[in-house]
Each structure stands twice: as structure tokens, then as C-alpha cells.
Length: 491
Image 1 (cartoon, rainbow, N blue to C red):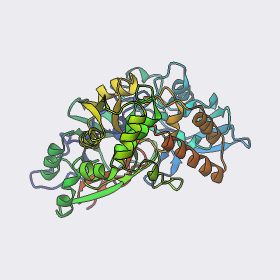
Image 2: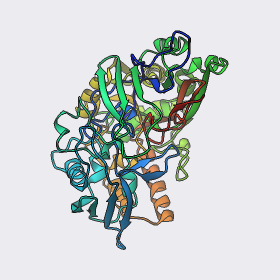
Image 3: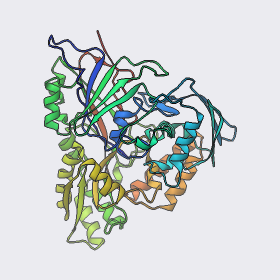
Image 4: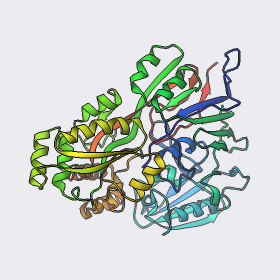
């Protein structure tokens, strides 16, 4: 689960005194800074925002439109029974430290991700792998315990990038990948710098240097863009300012979809949230549109379950949790909380959480639920909420693609434990027929909606404000990434 970043300006990449743009450099701002630089061991979206496709690559990858395309695997063969994937790797690939990337590194990466002591935030992606066999330096065979229609999709996640044993020890502070950019410097609290990899095995990017600046405050974000201190701000955190940028010929505004289901995360094992009546009361106390309008200035699509509305398999379940404070109060009384109760509401830094949290706190107060709000920095949120599960409520956007499977993991931070749902996900993973998969996904969406596991708020929109001459930035975010591989300046 992951959702946060921002950008910056590098020393070599500025406006010249004449006002001309440096044509081979970019400074990109994002709101949230990565807590570390290991996409295979950290849960924060901000890691992928900076490093996905730029520094690290996987066997497959997401294209700008969400399609699964070739990565380090140039082709693959699937056995008739769907259990064995044979990947044919690109030749001549080296890591940024000069070591060769080959089938041994793929085996190392996948075995490490699925090991018992793995700290991979999406370990479930690798759970079905029973064996990884090196056939030769450019051929690796992956065997599954059952067919998995999502396997090539899973291998495109940032959590599944290929790393090397030679450089894994320091990956959190010095990431060594195979991508078109090399990591140069990280000034924590300020910026991260990348340089074009001249030894890259694939097409060379147009940019020579790139700087990510981390600007968390919406007011500072507005000032940085208006002053042209940054060339683009991906995930611009102050949507109320977008009309001003749209009217300014210096800028372009791109508004797209993300895979970010924004939810009122609920600790299902913490009383009173272990009672479905209380969780249902929460859901009916929430006015989604008021949150979208008040926190996001209208940017966002209401959701009634943990699934992206732009996905063809989305089921509209909004009616299960329509705004009905009277019903909410009666459910609380039925559950023994006629006088309400008090719980914690721990908020990470993004604007949707901080602004949305104030609105939700007011809505919950109206039905008798008091919230003690704590604003956390991202590293604190990961530790307290995600890792230690020390929370009652939180607000976060889950930006991983097609991640409804997290509800099958009872150890996941909201601690939902439903054997029926877990069995359904096992069946889905083993199903390749598209119509059957659609039916199973509809069942899955319905179960978690009717169990009121979390408060389903809205699908996060992503707004990018960029200088008018910049081209090639992703409009939508099929995964949380600021992919610079196709970015250039127009002449």
C-alpha cells in the first residue's frame, strides 16, 4: 500500500539567466518523500514514485495505459497446464555497478521475496511460486503451485523488481538497478537526484539528469510551481489552485485516474470495530461527496468497495453505504453504543488524508463517534498503523493496481479475517477464464462491501501541473510511478 511523493530541482538543471530551459534536465516535485529506497522491502508508494521504471525494472512492467508489457523478460512461454513460466531475458543487461544481470539475479530476487523472513510489503504476490530454476544465463523457469491468471501482472509491480545479491545490503540508501537512470544523491528532506545510465540496455531516455523535490505543504507547492522552481508537480496537492494554472499559458494541467482506493481504514480486530454493526454505522455516517468536494475540490470518484471504477469488472455498490446518519445512530445503539465512543484517527501527510480527516471527524461526531486526530509523518504512519496496527481509524489511498487480494491476508494492517473471502481469492488466482474471473471479482467486491471492512470513500484522482513545453508525462497512474523514460522537452 503505498501513496506519496514530490519533486525538486537539481543544481545542473535550472532556468538559464536568459530564461531558456535546459533541454536535457527536469525537476519534478512530489508531495511525499520515500522513507527508504528499497521497493522490495518497503510499503510506501513514494518509493515506486521515484524509482519504478527509472532505476529498477522487473520481468514485466506497466505501460502508461496500464497494459502489461515486456521488461527484463523479452518473451515468455507458459506450459499447457499454466504452472510453468519460462522467461527469456534481455541480453547485455548490467546493473548500475557494472555487474551482469542474468537468470541467477532473477532467482535471487524471487526467492528473496517469497522467503520466510521476507520483508516484502506484497509478499502474497510470490506465495504461489514453488520453484525458480536457472536454465541458462538468459533463461529462468518459474513453477507455480496452481495456475495464476494474474502472474504476469504481479511481476509488473514495483515490489517484484529484479535486484542483485552484490548490492542488496545497501539497497535502502543506495539503490542499484538496471534501469535507464542511476541513483546519484539523496538529500533527505529535500531532493533525490538521478542521472542517465549511458550503459542502459534499452532505448536511451531524452533526459540526462532528473531531480525529484519533496514538497509536502500545499502552499509551498503552489509557490514552487508559480515561481517555476520546478518543471512539473505530479500529484499536485492543492486542487483548488488548478483553475489558476489552467488559465496560465506557462502551464499545462493533466488530470487522470489512479489505482488509489481512498478508504477510511478500520482496525477490524480492535473493539468496537470487531462488530460489523459498528463498521456499518461508520459507513452510513460518511458523506462521500462532502469529502470529495471539501478535501479534493470535486476531484475524485465515489466508491462503494475496494475496486477502481474505471476497471470493467467494477461493481457499483454505493447503495450499501449511502449517507444515512439516522441509520448510523440506530446501529450504534443496537451494538451497545447509544452514547457513542471515542477512537483514534491517525492521518498520514497527503492532503486527501489531512483535509479529509477533519471532514470525517465532523461527520462521525454528528452520530456520537469522537475521534482523537494524530497527524503522522509517513515513516511514523508505516510504523504505527501499517506495521504495529496501533490505530482505530486512518485514511489512506491504496494505489497498488488490482489489490483487492489484500483482504485475504488476515495479518494485513486492517486485520480482516474471513475464510470465505480467502477461499474466493484462492479460486480467483487459479482461474484464467475471463468471464469466470469477472464473476469471482464481483463476488469479492460484494463481500467486503457488505462486511463494511473499511469505509470506502473515493478513487483518487491525480493532477499534474507541468510547464507547457514538457511532454511524455503519464496522465493516469496505473501504478504509483513518475516514469521519466519517455519524458522530453518540445522544441
